[in-house]
Length: 221
Ligand SMILES: CCCCCCCCCCCCCC(=O)SCCNC(=O)CCNC(=O)[C@H](O)C(C)(C)COP(=O)(O)OP(=O)(O)OC[C@H]1O[C@@H](n2cnc3c(N)ncnc32)[C@H](O)[C@@H]1OP(=O)(O)O
Image 1 (cartoon, rainbow, N blue to C red):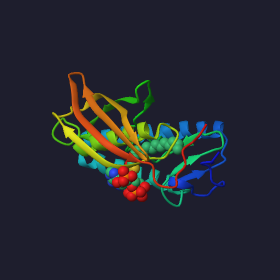
Image 2: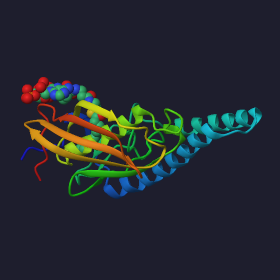
Image 3: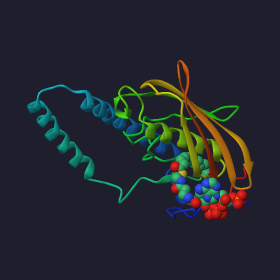
Image 4: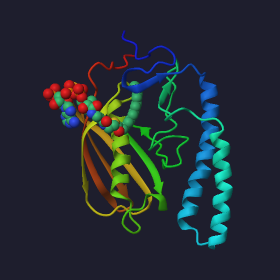
């Protein structure tokens, strides 16, 4: 059996990092960071939509600068990366789509189902492109992620090779559903289709080729 695990602390195939933090400690810290990110997400939305007076905006800015300094007191040297321990518990707290510590991420909660993956998400003012509609790049980002998770099927690393989007109509901000499934596989290539829907039906369709980079092992067990 080929192990996907490099030595502790080493960067493995696909950029994954083995980290021997025990799962209960990972779970505990993840909950702490998710609660902070949730409040920062509220801050982002409140910032976009606030109509308070200029003086109050400046006071809030100054208070926030102090809070940033407190978080800067101890920082990782770079991005958070993807870590996992010997129990297969993986965590990628900085991920742009699902990162528990990333207020930029909606975050998407991907569910594996019988046909592939799906996710229900509510997108607010921070994801606007055209007035009242989701930014096309945000739609592509969310679909790319759920398609990548579907292609990897929790047993191999896949990278996006080619992603094609068809925007059928504007995607309204608010509650949305994403769905993705594998349509076929050819060697290291995995062909995936996906969609975003609102209550009226599909707004965006995507198809993509996800590739298991040469030399990266599948997880066999
Ligand atoms: C592990 C546990 C679970 C983990 C879960 C994590 C979930 C994370 C979810 C994250 C989700 C977010 C996901 C992200 O955001 S992933 C980030 C965005 N994507 C990238 O950065 C990828 C950058 N590109 C590369 O790394 C390489 O070019 C890849 C790996 C893609 C191929 O380089 P490699 O050297 O391996 O390829 P090869 O030359 O041996 O060719 C092999 C075959 O592939 C065909 N081909 C090649 N390129 C393309 C292409 N662009 N489109 C279509 N087909 C292509 C080629 O014709 C050949 O086919 P054939 O001739 O054999 O028929």
